[in-house]
Length: 381
Image (tube, rainbow, N blue to C red; front, side, top):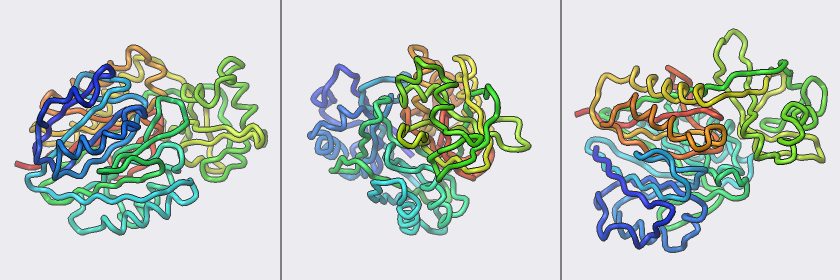
């Protein structure tokens, strides 16, 4: 496995890329950037000219992750060749949340094989139900680990874009199956958020739309908890106040839900993933140190599942809500990940509207929110 990277800062344009690419025979190229970057009509052709034999996939972000930390309005390009593994890239359009599971089932059937080891998954960030998407994949693939995330648009909640070779579109789900006995995979996911305030039971919901808590309309109750000032800037301000789903018998919060939209007419809250009737939720809060420790802990979960220190690639997908809390210090969590994984591991990734990754120490992939997730890839020597 070979990995090479190149990047454009916010002040650079496509013409500032070097004349030749660092890995022209790449088989897979991961690209993360802003909506402005992906709206450049020249982008797909330029990338294809640099990587003519590669499958080129990517999505827009709420911040790009690279070896130097976190950037906004940059373009992060990671090229990969496999020595002993193979890949298969599939995609589908899913422009509404109701078809998320069906879309995933169709993609999973195309990827299913005895030697499938993991799936990299990038999806639209605003028109997909992340929980239903994963459930669809798992209904076909079983416990194959799935890592990746939902595209962002810098907390504008307006439009996210996905890149697949010569096309940039909204509403795409792109799944990359990776195959072979020599492929090494590991994952880690931790948040660092702490619940506060009284527990509330979800008394009326429909998948990812919550209508009532404790028998009361959800939106007015949520507004009351976050205060008048924050309520004025919903849904964006909701990124700072996610829900923790309190699971019976578990001390740590493993499932957090991020607000995507509100409907004042129905007094409802729409989240990136399902919040089931009967579940108990609490609002969350955090601080800089807790988030950095959560990111470092996610990296330690990766290293704890590895028996090697050879070169590898870490796909880091973290939540835009963490970025809003940490502000100018957001690079601290990426530096913590790099320190734990070591500099033989190349980092790439993005800030998202939802993160796909197995629960800690399992292959059971779930939709995370407000969490640092890491999907590690390498090949046996």
